[in-house]
Length: 122
Image 1 (cartoon, rainbow, N blue to C red):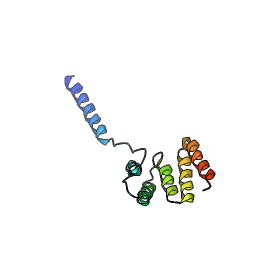
Image 2 (image 1 turned 135 degrees about the horizontal axis):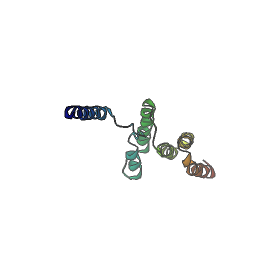
Image 3 (image 1 turned 180 degrees about the vertical axis):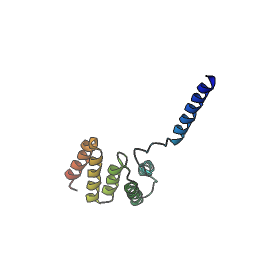
Image 4 (image 1 turned 60 degrees about the vertical axis):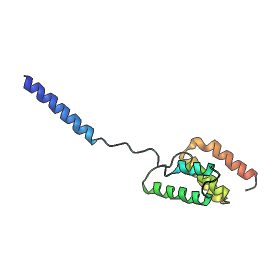
């Protein structure tokens, strides 16, 4: 009787160890692609030029699309701001529209940006 109980306990422990070993880390919700670094660089006065920041963020968009992942909230909005600052109004509007589609809760803020843009004649 003792041997049977020990075998069952040992089998259960072995099965548990096997199952725990098969567990993999969950897939991250967002692909950040250096987004936080780019925002920090934008806020610093001695950060890289906005064109360089745009290139880095655009590269992140491509990498994310290639991985079938999602960009984090604010990524497209920040890219739109950089586009606007460099005179690319149409690209800014397109990036902001992407932000609204991905994150509908951003619509009031994005609509505010667009209305200010139109109000100022851009």
